[in-house]
Image (cartoon, rainbow, N blue to C red):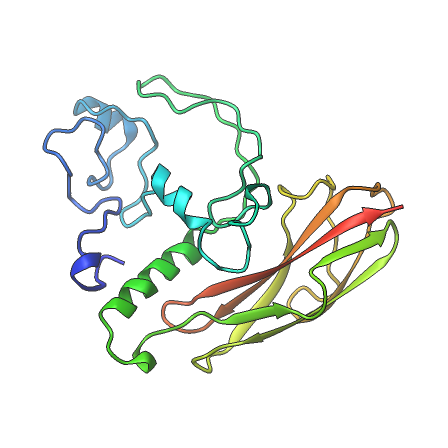
Length: 239
């Protein structure tokens, strides 16, 4: 991202050697290769663990914005179903403090959307400094064939089919996965063909009426940088 034109040069990443305000004891993002203890020894308030050089710096406004992007996850329609910023209902324990005392946190089993979101951002900046459409990458298109809101009984087999294409004629790789954190069925399901456009899932015998299972088809092209889009099917268990 940092090398995508004049605007990209202003973007902050870990280890970039920059500091927004001189001697700000909360801004230690510019350092590379220092441990938390070494940063504390320099007088910094280490409120989040240091990351490797080049790593993404996420702030509150970033994640407020990410679910507004039309990437196919539909997070902007309902905060409970999740998007690139995660979901709005998964419970977490602990709060990040401003002191140096450690704060206990419970990790949530969220997918790692950071690479896809960062590639998307880098590409948008490339668009802003590229005059010809063919000289930039563009996101693939993925669509569910049929209804994306399905109803099925426990033990029933649900058949899924989708289409995927790319405006730049790039190769598109697809994979199905279950977003467990946003569904209410508490266990995993198995895809018959997880890397094909057509697959099937058997609703587990212990699923109960009213529970939901979120099935996501992820499509990624082989452009530079690789771009990812999604389609989601929500299965509601019936009696």
